[in-house]
Every structure is written in C-alpha cells, then in structure tokens.
Length: 482
Image (tube, rainbow, N blue to C red; front, side, top):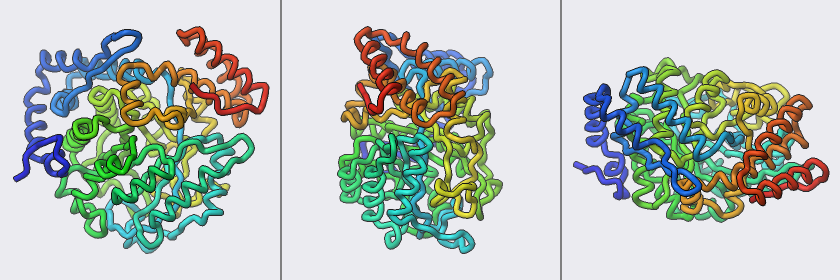
C-alpha cells in the first residue's frame, strides 16, 4: 500500500488514491461549513506586499472544499477572488497562441482520441519540413508569435529527431515581419535524454495532459500502447525538469472521470512539483471531452456542465494563483468569455486542429483531433478581447530573456511580473495591429493602447514603451522587450 508523499518521485505516492478519497470525503462533509469556507477564501485573497501583491494559494483539501460548495453566494465570492487574483498577477492581458499539428500517426489505443491506432477511416498524415514551413508562414501571416506543436506517439513516424527538425524549421522561418518566437511542445512522455534534447532545441513549455489521475480509469482508457503505463506518464514532468526544462504545463481532460477526483489530483500534482523542484506548473489547461471523428463524448458518463466547468476554473486559479491558465477553441465564444473573468490568462485563436490545416482554404475536418467550437479568425478574437477590456498579448519576452522556471515564479509570486509584462503586451499588440489587423481592429487597438500606456506607473518604463510603440508604427523595427 502506497502512502501520500508529495516529495516522492513515485506516481502513486504523490497522486495518492487514499488521500484523494479522504479529501473528497472531507470536502463533502464541509461543503456548507461557511466559517471554514470564509477562512479558505480569506487565505486565497491577494495580500498587499511592497509594490505588489502575494497569494499563498490553497492546498488540495482547501480547494476541494470550495469546489464541493454549492452555496450561490459563496460561489460568487470564489469568482470575485479568482478575478482579483488574475488581475493582480497577470493584469488584463490575455496571451494568444495557436496549436500546430505535425502528425496524427499514433500507436496508442486511447478511447477518447480519434488518432487511436484502430481508427482506420481517418487519413494519416505527417508534415514534411517543407510543409511545416508553409504552415508556419500561414500562421505568421495571421499574426501568431507563439505555437504549441502537437504530434501523436509513434516512434517510427514521429521520433524525437523529427520533432527536433520541426522545431528548428519553425524557428528558422522569417516571413515579412513574422517570426515564431516561442515553440511550446505537447508530445508523449519520454526520457530524460530526450527532454534534454528538447531543452537544447530552445522550447518554451513542455505540455503533457494527464487525461485522468484515476489509475484504474487511466489504464482502462489507454488499453494499448506505451501510454498505458500510468506511472511513466504521470512521472514525466519530473523527468522533463531533470532534463533541464524549466516550464511544464499540466492538464486533465475533464469528462473522462469524476471531476472532483480529477481536480484534487491536478492540485496535488502542482503541489508535488513545488515540493520537489521548487517550481509549480507554468501552465494548467482545462480541456473537456469534445466530439471528433470516431469519438462520441456521450460515451463518457462524467461530462460536466458549463457551470461546473467555470467553478473548476475559478478554484484552480485560487489554488495555484501563479500559473498561466489556458482555454482552447474547444470551447465556445460564450464559455470562453465567462472563463476569462475566472482566471484564464491564455487562449488560442484561429486554431486548426488538423494536420496541415492552416494552408487549406477551407477548414479540413477529416484529420481534426477534436471539433473546434470557436471558429473565429485570429483578428476576430483579438478584436473581441479588446472590446471586452483585455489586452491581447503576443509577448514571449520572459522566455527569451531567461525569465523561466524559478526566475519567472519569483517575479510572478511577488507580483512584480506586471512591470515587464504590461508594456511588453502593448508593444507586441502594436506589432500585430500594424502588420496584420483589419482597419477596425487597428482603430480599437490604438485607442486601447493609448489608455493602457497611462496606467504604467514607472515614468521611465512608460517613456521607453511610448517611444518603442511609436517606432513600431513608423518604422520596420520590431521585437522590443523589457
């Protein structure tokens, strides 16, 4: 019998079923304990410290109590605190990115993914380096600066050398004023040696979704292939960090298992990374099971409503205040709009979830990994964000200035990251407006930038940012950063 130990490197110790079951029992018993809930909410609130704010976050037990609570007034308080944390740590900036699917060859048998090996009516495709370059140019022409590359697990068709070649190709493409400045990588669990190779290739964040933390469900949902190994998959982030990767991204696929179990496991994984490496997850993603070729989400009886999904998002923000939170185009415009208030700090825009999708005039569906609910163009997403008071940010400065891992976390946890990120967001937004935006989007953006420049407290930073923005508008100079 394993015992709960967040410092252990063994999956069944740091994601311990007995501890999760005890946590869920405790949360159920205290879900109407208003004195305890008020105490937890007070602990979660940002506290003023020096020129910034600090948040202590919540333990998996404390956060699980809030998730179990069904009192409407307390839920609204959770949402208010989640929004306050997001604004104190990240301001009104929303980082934009796009996924780039390299290959849908896969040897796994995952029951929820159309790329599973037994699906014989999905066309299999793998991009050549020339096709990767064409996809990158198409993404640059949209205005993207940050990509998350995706590939199925197939040691023959998608070996690590292929992934490294693709990363090199992506970084090498400079088209007009376009450049991909950060490549995040979402590929299968691998070895420390391969993580070192990814680190040396200059990746940003290594992303790996757990799918489900429930071991029995995990093994049932992954009946065949290397992904069947629960421990190897769950311990991947430790190997990635041992391989020198500073920033890792967690996520579960909500709807596969009971959401309260998944939530507790997710927060425990964040606690484990903090305990062992001193650095928690750089990002947490919150995808839900969606319809796709050969996949019917109705087959999974743990699907969650929009209201529950929003409460999960808010509770993650309260528990792990420093993390970047991501919602993709799996979700509708309406759902994404609500979630921006609750702590989301990154969204995808103009996404195609098929291999080679960006160079196709019509959105291809035969190789999509999941249905895209928000099918707006990047420009429409940028305009929507600005009309709702957000700053669309294409910034990659922290990664390129070496502010990663514990260096990023120390800035973020002390509330100081805003001193860099706010002006960087405005400068990269200006780049987008000058080079790619529709006239209406450009007008809205320039008005927003004018207002936001006035909010920069440091006169020197404000003066430099104002001059840099003028240079971007009036010359071909790009890529200023604090």
